[in-house]
Length: 222
Image 1 (cartoon, helix red, strand yellow):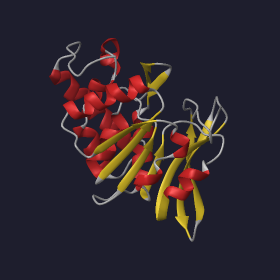
Image 2 (image 1 turned 120 degrees about the vertical axis):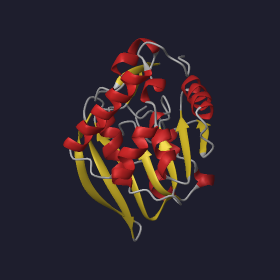
Image 3 (image 1 turned 60 degrees about the horizontal axis):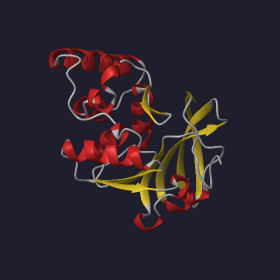
Image 4 (image 1 turned 30 degrees about the horizontal axis):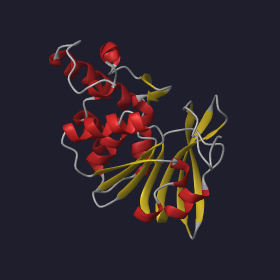
């Protein structure tokens, strides 16, 4: 797995590329300045393999190994914006991957609980995030479709892999008034949804079309 320090691009170029990406996200309709500021504080180039560092601030997903990807920055921004996080919130993330999305969430929320089914990705993300100074992120290796029951209920849940349907375990772990963002659909293409729990039911709002890797687990894809 890749480490923290990369030298493929000079630090000054990172800053310029990052500012250009943030301007692009604003042009695409991201309006929450707290989200944009959080993304400005997280060095995306430290979350991609060394050979892909020159592309770290392009608005596209990139492979991180093990058949997984780091999400497109626009999707990260849109999903995080839709969660409407406050500093007191407890957030569950399904699919740690590189740890980039967890870092953005940790900039905005009180506590982040992140579940990853692949041990090598979870371990690398934990090392990376702890090396960057994050102390409000908790890690688990396991079936993300089952959530993290003993840590719930959660004010917000973000699923970063495509589900055929909403896992009921996650619905149960979502607090009343909590927000869930999840891609739903087939293995090849999906729709990103924001859901809010009201009187035990989910109120759905469409966000955008999307393409994620499959959510593998008991309540996802086999």
